Each structure stands twice: as structure tokens, then as C-alpha cells.
Image 1 (tube, rainbow, N blue to C red):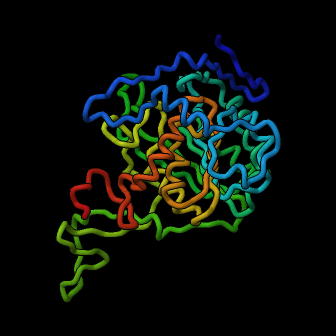
Image 2 (image 1 turned 45 degrees about the vertical axis):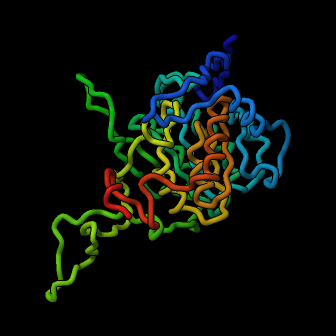
Image 3 (image 1 turned 180 degrees about the horizontal axis):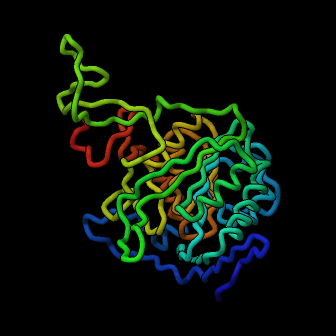
Amino acid sequence: MNHKISHPEKGFEMTCFNKKQYRMTNKKPAPRNRTIQITKEDSKNFGKKLIKLNSNISIDNLINKTINQDIFKTIEFLPDGFIDLLFIDPPYNMNKKFGASKFKESSVEKYTEWLDNLISKLDRCIKPTASIYICGDWKSSTSIHQVMEKYFVVGNRITWEREKGRGAKTNWKMNSEDIWFGTKSDQYVYNPDAVKLKRRVIAPYRTKSGKPKDWDETDNGQFRLTYPSNLWNDISVPFWSMSENTEHPTQKPEKLLAKLVLASSEVGDVVFDPFLGSGTTSVVAKKLDREYVGVEMDENFAVIAEKRLKMVDENKSIQGFSDGVFWERNSSNLRK
């Protein structure tokens, strides 16, 4: 039986479907299809790792856990001041189905109220030195900016190219998304040297003696390390032949999260994601030796997250990140 979880004062409604409507399969995918799937056995084994909160919990019992619950039912039980890095990838203000739940588009005012209600409740959990990133599209960015100014010091807005999108005859194709960056105070972590981008040099300059100027000459080509900007065009959206790909409809790339985690946290810091989805934030945090806590209300996506976290024990690589630097898209043949 389907049921609705409504937050009228937040102006947002979500319909949750019976989890039997999610298809688990033991069917073997095509050889080149590396999409992570879950079997009934996965659901049983990894489902045991999920937790639900019905009373206050200490940080020691919360670290490196996936909470299978609605974030609005979880917040009141979370400890104070435990978050070093908050990453929020909320449902955008549009009609969208996420596995066993469906979100309805609302007015900008109501979406702003919903987001404000979330942040106001999470605020006590954030450390004074924390950084905050909130994702959105062109429409929800209006609400994000308004709410972030109310609670945080707004630092910047990152725009990243999605690389793919559906064409439209009545409007411009939506090929980008925003990530708003803020901090709880003027004291925060920022490591620009950890997120440099290695670019190919098209028109290299040399000194009078003939030596490379601000770039390196290697056997594989000519490259320059550049500091990160707020415009990202090096991100590949996960697709079926990538080992990180899942069936989540709005999965964020590991490379994208790696930039944020490396730039705005230190080893051992706690990274928190209240809309974990298929687990990318927790997976990247684990790969980069951070602690993590994630909340995901859809049990099947939460199970996928736990399966991916187990896979990290065998492989900590992040596509597009190697040798301590980020690389441009389609440059794997240039790396050694």
C-alpha cells in the first residue's frame, strides 16, 4: 500500500511506494554494463547494516553508518556539533521519481520554506568551523541562496557542466547544475592545493632560455596544474559502463564529491549527507579517509550505498583523480 509523508508547513509532499515495487534481480547484466545492482541476498546482508533512530545517539555510535529513515524523522536524534562538512543534494524543485518515492514541484516560496525548515533543524549539528555545500538547478538556486544567507556565510556558487542532457524545442537545454558553497563562520578548512586540475597546454609559453613557463613537459604531453575555479567542465556523469554507476536517477559523480571533500575537510573529519541516495558521499569520504554519516529513506538505495562502501575495501580509486590531481575528461590515456 502506498502512503504519503507530508510536510505542509514546508510546502513539500513526497509519496512513498511499497518497497516491493522496486525490482531486484539476479539477472546477469551485459558484459560492458558495470552498473551496480542488488540481489535479494544483497538486500538481506547489507540491509542488516542499516540503522534507524528513535532516541538520541552518540557520535561514536553514529560514525560510518547509513541511516535508513526520513531525514525529518532523524534530525531530532542527531548529536550537536558533529558535522565538519555538510553536503546536501536535496530533491530539486521539480516533479521527479526517486526509486520508491516521488516529489512534486511547488512554488519557489514553498520550496524555500521547505529548505529553510531543513537547515534550521540541522543547524545545531554543524560545527562552528564547518563548510556547507548545497546542490541545485537554475530554479532551486534562488531558494538555496536565500536560505544559505540566513544561516551561513555564503562563499561562492560552483557551476558544473553535466555533459549530457535532453534537447528542447521551447527552451535552452539544461546542461548545468549549481553547488552553493558556504561556511558556518570565517574559520574553516580550505585546501586549494588538494584539488588542482591538470590540463593539457595548447599554446605553451617558454622562457628566454627555452624552458617551460608554468607548465611541465612530459613523455605524455604538455600539462599545467591550475587552481580550482567555480566553473567545472571536467566532470563525467556516471553511466552504464562506469564501475560507480547505479540506478539512482540523480547520482552525483564520485569525482565531484572528491573535490569538495578534499577542499573542505581534513583526514578524520565527519562528512554528513542527509539525502545520501546510492551512497556517493559516504563512499568518497571513506576512500579519502574521512568519517561519514548518511541518511537515505529508500531502503534499496541505502542497501546499494552499503554495498558500494564494502567495495571500497577492494578499490579506493576515484575516476578522474590520480597522482594527487584531478584530470580533464577523456584523458585516461595520458596518465601513467
